[in-house]
Image (cartoon, rainbow, N blue to C red):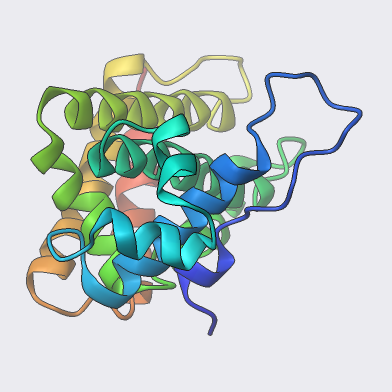
Length: 207
């Protein structure tokens, strides 16, 4: 399976899209950071490593980021969006959500498990960025929780409360962290079962 670093989407933006679309060099730097993280881990990654992998100059790096931590935060945000997209892409909102939990979680966990070293960086080392790291992590979790809410609406239209949706996301994240700590993050498929039971137990209960 290709590594997460090699599958971080860094294609140049479409000229027809708004100017807010990130510049090609910005995307190349995120791809360079992902490649460097996969090879060396965050602590040993230098700006020189990032620009070498991205095939851009150090000057170009500083046009987009002040520090390597800023680059990591941007990579985290992009990777989180891609993980959410993998989850969303596995769900058909026109079908009963209970029939799709296992498939959706498999797609999500498979995306995260593509590169164990990058996974550890995004789940553990991001917290080394202090408050900015915590904020970007909370934002990503909130987006996933919001999708859990929208995807688990009961037949009578009742939605899972926001705090319970966040509890589901937090529980799954803790399962992933335990796997990372056990150095078994090359595969997360064994979490599909307990994560599925967690979602169905919480989202399928009284509201």
